[in-house]
Image (cartoon, rainbow, N blue to C red; front, side):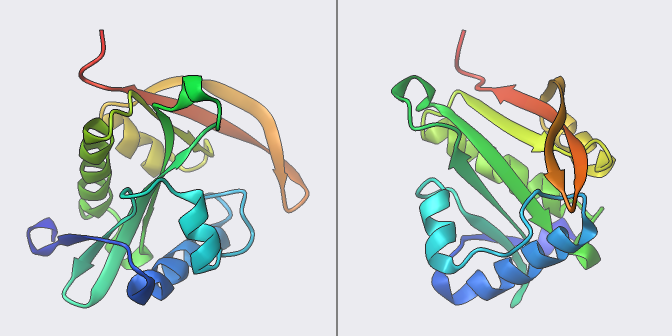
Length: 165
């Protein structure tokens, strides 16, 4: 499937497809603490410029990825958090890996030295995807937050730039 994938920047016109894929991720209960989909304006203000990308097969969006800042403190200017969401019908077909590798190359070009991901332990497919793309498990943040009244743990993963010592 990945040979037909075209990676393009996320724009206003294709954001409804981002919202749809994200909404389905929210519904799984194992993708995010978020319970609602962001508006275009809120999403744009939450992601780093030039880091939102979507995978398309023709006119059909298969998934998306983006980086967001982890802090506004200058010492963390090169640290970002990655989000990767793949439509249920396109999962386990290489779409997530293609998107993640694409945004990691963009992170390198932007001088980001650490990309981190926080993933629910139940989402083993996402954990395995990140590990396969060079992420390492740093630890588990126990009872980090509540989702629908239940405390949830989050596995923290990170990937260091290939260009730092």
